[in-house]
Image (tube, rainbow, N blue to C red; front, top):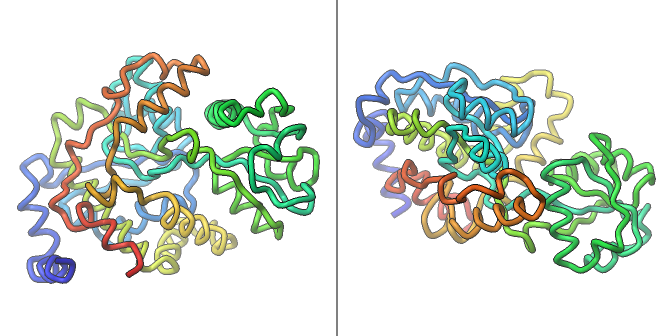
Length: 345
């Protein structure tokens, strides 16, 4: 099955296949992509798809990949139609819907939430192996979604009242490494940053206890409904970029650095962020069964409940209204067979 599909791609050409799957709204379409933050290793699939010509092969002109100002900003811009596609977080899609913005998630990038509690072995004085070790420690994180997810985790584990939780702002990693706080909460890219400073970092996964998603691809409902084939083309090309980047992680990191030369001094760091994302966060049982990008209602509802517990606006919406699988072309090899293509044989 895998070989025959690839042979078919080679014989017909991806542009021909795009024409078979696509319709008039995708012919010569233009679209922009707004990232959630400054470009980094977590954005390798999009730069790969752009640099390898995968969007162009779908007859889609990607007019730019723009740095963002946070997931709340990118969700808002997608909902307002200021960017046709945006990388944001699942939680911010829910929050944006609560604010009556016209935004919907059309594909999941991070099938597992990225929030982790972590310690530096030398400072913590022991291997971090269980949440019970957090009793009595000072734990720091920034405000917002990371803190809400972490507090939900600590409450579930029965140690929330035994932890001194402090707001460490945007300096959480350095406060941990300097010993100002005993433990930290952040996203897995923070862990990569800490390890690149030479520290032995150990982690506890929040999403193992509190199911959630991380990065998602969002657009406006009105744009998707008016341009369904353009959305399908964008998702096919992005999935193809993810497959190629998975098979060629060093070269894919190089494509990111060619597009963003100022990252050259952090090449190894960006590569490790991509490696962590592709190996630990992009696969799930839902992806293996249905394909790349797949949404599951139970995970969205778990996230909505967590937001509701923290009095976030996204907790008040109907989670089913915030996402759709309708634009995921599971007949496409790179979407429908993603799990088979990227898992080691």
